[in-house]
Length: 123
Image (cartoon, rainbow, N blue to C red; front, side, top):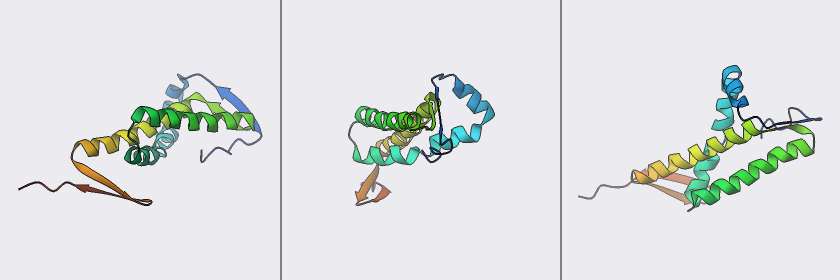
């Protein structure tokens, strides 16, 4: 979404999911950043949400809306690879927090701030 306006005045569609192979080969840093940007969103949603399935579906709807708006308003390319990478980053962020929770870490939120702490071992 940060590069949503890089192709202003141009719209196209890429519905070939195998194009991810070309992007990994030709632009690995772009693929990495595309996933990395959505890890924090997945992490924050994981802290507040109780259902991973519902969170992923809502996130998918948001990403699809963004991608379709790029096409409709001639702001860029509706790209299935972007959708896949954004979703992978979101799920990875969600799973990271779930992993910490399963290891006994507590994630507390106070307004917009989050703190992660290890449970005190019982004596």
